[in-house]
Length: 458
Ligand SMILES: [Zn+2]
Image (cartoon, rainbow, N blue to C red; front, top):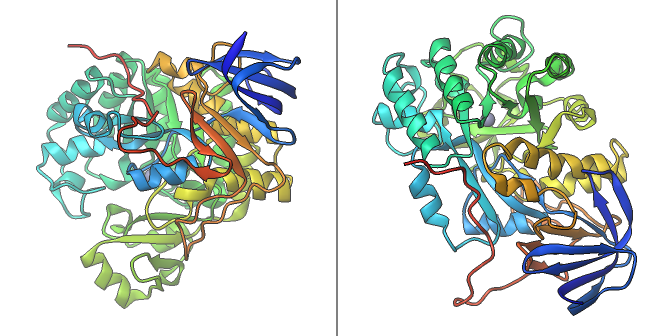
């Protein structure tokens, strides 16, 4: 038997079965055909002694869906990347823009925020302006529902929410949208209504809204970036989530391995004059990405009129550690221009938190970046059932890295530096990173990334 491609003597880590042993892997037609203790024969054979071979990483939370960021993702070991929080209001167009053009697999949610922006005629934007009708108005629920249902019928992978950005969205509006997610059997990815550790209008009150929605509608839920929303009460939020799961709720949560959040200065997050108290910070904890300057009351007011991204230095490291150590968290990078999480999140987990600090095991880290994200997407698309694991019959989306050298290089000053120590990355059986270098495809070669999309209903 001759395989298309054989990796010899790699340390295979498969979180689905807790398998961790030296094996050789044979690939045919983009699929793992054999995992063997014996030496396999291939048209291409690569010895990967001393390297780890694991499922390619799956990032459910990225806002950076351009060629430039797909390349950085490849170099961070990611083989499938999704926009499931903000999402889009045009599923067909979003997929059409990427068809046959991407190095890695991609997918998107129908977004509650973009649906609102469409219904209230907001100009194209990441999130609505803080004082716009799309953020503040409370009517037009039926039209918003219609947009969301249409997106679900066009194969959306989830329903995305950023409730904090649209305070006009009533609790009832959110109930109705969760019901739609349940009807089409996809997960709700939720950036919650409030942030911070305060009792009144804080993150625990927001989490209780989400938990009630899950209990009543039975929709599956993934709570976005728990650490940057809950800050010093992240441990309490995790306790509630663990209890909810124990009591049968289909709920997970997500974090990224950094202590600064990132968002638009012009968004509704800062509408409430209480944001400093809620986040436990002041202006000088905000960095304006375009200029790199730390803000004060005057520059904050000026840039709030102009718009633009800011880094919010608010997250205690214990919140990141609590998330790393919870069995129900997955790593979602929340990739956004101007923040190192867009380029280095996976390598940072493996280099900094696994190797250097020993906060979690390699197996757990890999599970959070492959199997768990695949599992929450399986009900939306069967394409995820063969991803996020290494077994015979699985899609050959693979990451091969050196556990001794893997390292994130991106910083707040230089957020686009690619990670190091990722040696080979395969997407659908084809190399996108080989021998530590991005594979350059010539113009006539169709890159290997595929659309990951739900069922299309006419
Ligand atoms: Zn968010």
